[in-house]
Length: 231
Image (cartoon, rainbow, N blue to C red):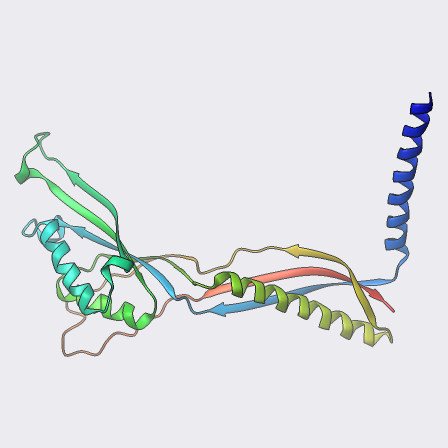
């Protein structure tokens, strides 16, 4: 019996505390606003896919030969092969169901990381000179993306506070402390590009200027709902 009384008392006290907290929030004069912020970032991590295929040369050159030519071209473009280039896929197909060296058609995919549009342009030019044009941008990113995410969140909170202060001033009041904050998350745009960028062999000649390549910037968007007490 005594145990039941203690249990009922604990439930009553918990309910009373919740009711009081809700009452305090509802009875308090407040203003609720939405803060928005957007930040555009020039990516410093551009991931490319380079596809080598023997069929592109009408089987006149092997993947191994194309690979060596590509290595030389990328070095001319200022690429550190050990740090910026990696193999992403290797495949071979057989004709007539017989394993014969002459019948094998091979292809190989590489992932290349460049850090700016100038280097990207050099890569396209050097690869185009050796007839490698099957290149696509996989995605773009930034090495300090978390720092920018934090900054855009701060900007959204500041925007909400400024908006609340302006609205409160219009009715002759001031805002006090924030009593409620609700984050509204949103993915950042520009990470996935999926844009094929193919160069034509006749487009770039050795005596032509370096092409100016541009790509989508990373756009960070953030919004937050904040309730401020009114004084």
